[in-house]
Length: 194
Image (cartoon, rainbow, N blue to C red):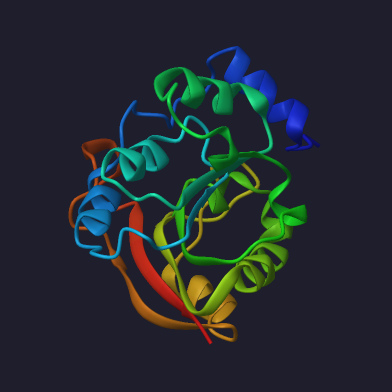
């Protein structure tokens, strides 16, 4: 069985084996970010890979946004694209060991990259990282969960059941503005910490 650890992800990024990376922020997240008016929110983009969502936050003036990854190469890629950025905003850490508080956490292909056995742990960790009334928002994949992955799938009923104890589910619906290869396969969501 594959262990999806730091070495696994570092190897994938060093070998440019990240077919999910489209080279820019995806439309659902861009449109979500575009409607946020408070640019001082403390925001985290975990398991962000090359961090296109984080880069978009930076270019849009979100001064308290941070990116976290367990592999150093994607963080180095971000640093190359944003050389003026304060390096404290690039967090090289294991998500499950990270300790801070955020108003908003953006989810983009991190949940689906984790072994499904870690989903309950992910949900509890997200809850602990959010400030009271903090939000977890982004995209979850909508296709059958199998042992093949990453990415690993799931469906709205599973997500409601899994997240419902710790989060108020404000939005969980098929994204209407996914990129063509992901049409019908992404659920846009906004969950608020209970």
